[in-house]
Length: 142
Image 1 (cartoon, rainbow, N blue to C red):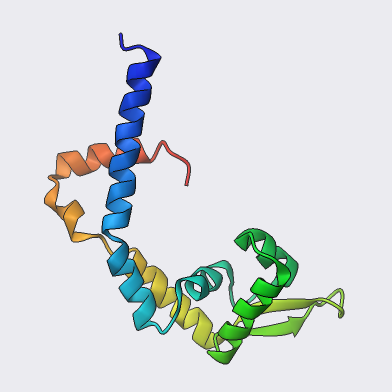
Image 2 (cartoon, one colour):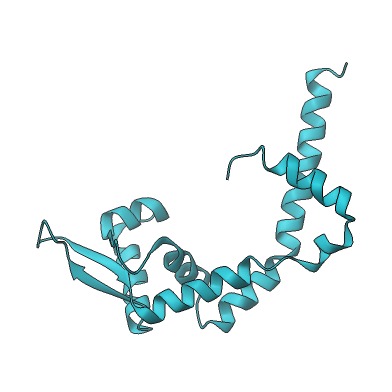
């Protein structure tokens, strides 16, 4: 039976491989974002929003781990791109909700579709390897 230091070493190696693959495929994700006319920050913001519910600036700043002025600047950019708009909160007219416009919803859907396209490197694994990888990864949160 392996001791904890062996397990830790293997876990570190697995993480380095996973992270390396994520970084290796980053240029494709960056290209998708750029083709949509977005910066990475705007893409992250777009992903946080929807066309119905709306989010307050306070909620967005907390999710994005930034201050209110940065959240405001980001939402301003999405508004200039006609992808988001501010609306009055239905219960508190002092608060504004940020929602996606139809263009924002379409762009978010396109971004999601493109981001979920299988990297060709995964198709180099055989089906049995892919099934094993899927089974293992399904045990992790996220």
